[in-house]
Length: 199
Image (tube, rainbow, N blue to C red; front, side):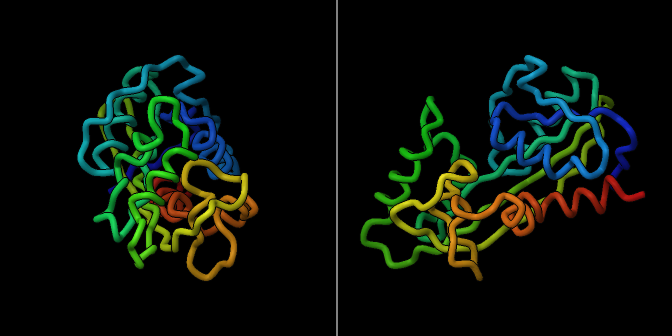
C-alpha cells in the first residue's frame, strides 16, 4: 500500500535542470515544497540498476537518506523498438559526459540507418523513498515515432525527435502544458498522485 505524502518538503532527486523543472511543475498544484538534489549539493549516485525502476529507487533512497527528507526520483529513457529497446536505461549515457543530446539523437538516427521501423516509446519509473527506507514506485509510458531531422527547441533530451501518437508535432515543438498532459512522466505521476497524494 503506497504511503501518503503529507505536508513534507520533497527532494527531487535529480541534477538534470530540465527534469527538475518538469517534475516541479507537476508537483506544484499540490502545495508541496520542493528542493532539488543539485541545490542541496547531494552527490549523484552511480546508476547500477538494470531496469528503470531499480535506478529510480536507487536515486530516491540515496537522496532521502542524505537529506533526511522524502525524495522523488525519476529514471526514464527512450526505448527504440528496432534497436531492441536501446538506448533504454542508457539514454543519458548515449549523450556522453557532456550530456549532449544532439549527439545522442545522431547516434539513434545512425543506428536506425536502413531500418524501416521507427517506432519508439518513452518509459518513466517514478520512485519515492522516505528516510526510514520505505519506498513506492510508479511507471508510465508514451508511444510514438522517431522523426529526422529533430524538430523544436522545447523539452529536453530526445524530445525533438519523438512525435507522440495522435500528434503531428514532436515533444520538442509541443507546448510544455500539452506535453505534461500526455508524457510518460505525466502517466507515472498520475499513478504517484493517486497512490501518495490522495486526500
